[in-house]
Image 1 (cartoon, one colour):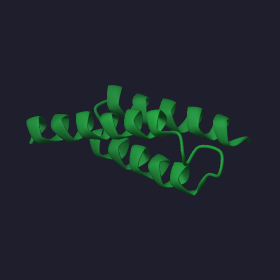
Image 2: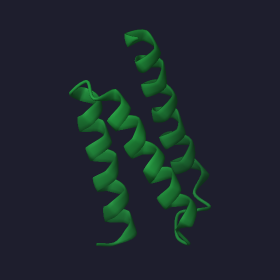
Image 3: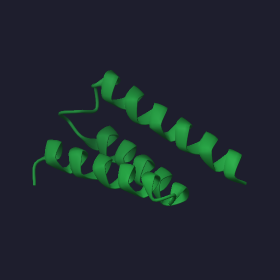
Image 4: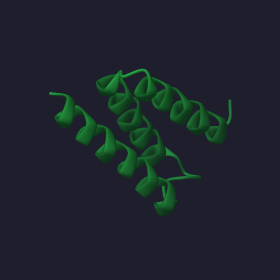
Length: 68
């Protein structure tokens, strides 16, 4: 699986967790994805992608706080 396919699959999985109300699992998946991106030669400099995933983490964190 290419790095791009891995990123797409991870984003989709995290989004599915979020829509199912599995907020902590969704957040963990986004954080794992950020670690993967940081290690990637191809994507580690893609600030737009990193910012987008960070935004999703922040949104999920807000949802978790609201739920608790």
